[in-house]
Image 1 (cartoon, one colour):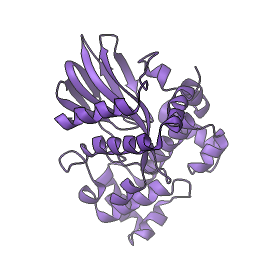
Image 2 (cartoon, helix red, strand yellow; image 1 turned 180 degrees about the horizontal axis):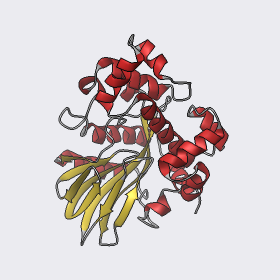
Image 3 (tube, rainbow, N blue to C red; image 1 turned 30 degrees about the horizontal axis):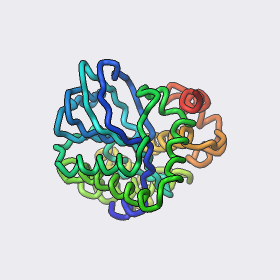
Image 4 (cartoon, rainbow, N blue to C red; image 1 turned 30 degrees about the vertical axis):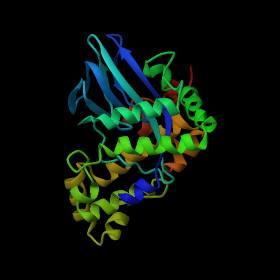
Length: 290
């Protein structure tokens, strides 16, 4: 896991302090970026089919990328927030095995970090709308990312460090499900290989051969530790990577299909619609235009 941290960087999108009301009510939001909240007043709710967490004063919350979530405030909610994109050369994700809403008690230092982020990155809030349908579209996200190019180098580096410090609050053994600690070593190795080779042909036979196991036994072991058959897991991660590329790049659909390991554009389109209820073109139009 340490190697993954060292080769992963995070690009700031937004940071601000806001006071929300009952209009903060959004359903089925699945973002390509991370969010961290620090609540200092009021209450709200984050929920999805897997869990429901009350937003309460004195706690930090993390919503990893590709974690579907509903947001709700009945009356009033005061929160610091920061959102950021995960950048890894191989497309791997620090929270690939932790796609869930996370909550930890906040410390005084967390508030200091948020206030320092605001000082380093003024005017980086969501000024026009808090509606994900507005601010998650490609031109908006791209404009936020480009603002990092105009930040002083010292501020950019310090911002990276603060984001890592805030993320580290969710990496404790009590909170973070580490593949190395929770999953059989051969399955963990297979997951790392899959995430770094999505653009290549991946078969159960090849993965089993790397693990020196019979394909049937390897498949059962993989499902036992991940809840997914190997091919289903590969498809899921390819679709997640395609969603990221659709929202965060201008690559043509055929190139995205190739870079995520699909043998043809037609197969990519069919599987993408099966998993997301939208074609890649529809998904891009819904997320990449005003």
